[in-house]
Amino acid sequence: GVLQRRGFLQKFRQEPAVAEPGKTTTAASAKTPTSWQTFRSLLSFLPFLLVMAVKVAFHNSNAATAASLGGAPAAAHTALFSVAMLCFTLGDVGSSLSQAFLPPFARTKVTNKVDENGEKTHKKKTIFDIEAARPTIAQLLKCTLSISTTVVVLSTLLIGIFGGQITSDPLVLMEMRRILPLVVATLMVHGSAVTLEGLLVARNDFRALTICYGILATAIAAFQVATRAFNWGLMGVWSCYVWFSLSRSFVFAAIGGLLQPRRWWKQLTGKFGNTSNGELEKESLEAI
Image 1: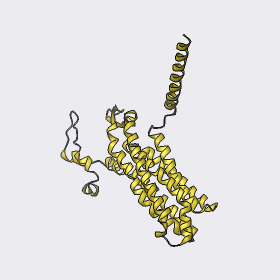
Image 2: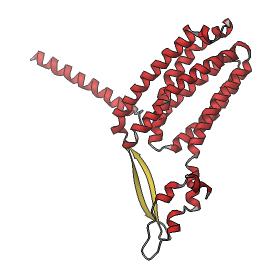
Image 3: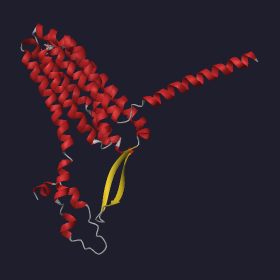
């Protein structure tokens, strides 16, 4: 009842109940969701909660590792993270763009089955037309690239040139500029990672997102332990940022269906084959 009043189960109240032959449907049964519907509604929030929890834990664990270094590295990470978060916010637009322009390429396939008791069950599956969506995805990635280029220039100016306005400590400033290449590498890949994450959201592939972030959570913990155990310092902290963005970009592109090596190989061999045939025809004509 509380969930209904808060609006979480509003979608169930709006769905009209369909009466089967020989059965009557009351107004209460048409509006009140069952316990199973309530449970499924709550479960639908779990992938989003897991993704957000892993991202928050990722930033917090890196901050804790940097704080354990003390001195100039800890202070440098605070300044670097402040600049990076400003740039991350701009790069996160890619996910919103994907969720705005890619859902039209997804359609829902409904399969009707009859179980042993003679009751009808409906199974829904989302089918995404990746081939039709490729031009749109390419445009989104181009837009993301322009945003990534902008934030790279911005971070380079703020840290590399105007870093003295952030801190007057020469040791902290030197540490910031030493880590700047890793910050730039992170920002270059971050935009594509969140854009391709939006692709999975548009495909309703929440199971893949849940599995990926579950594995990432374990890998992040291992990375933090290794950074402390092998004394990688602030370089290890920001290497984790680079790896986190780069691995997500590659994995999400693969799951989304964008990486097709066989197709690339056919296009490559076909192009070379056409070139070879053209050269042979030209040589035969010259011989004649």
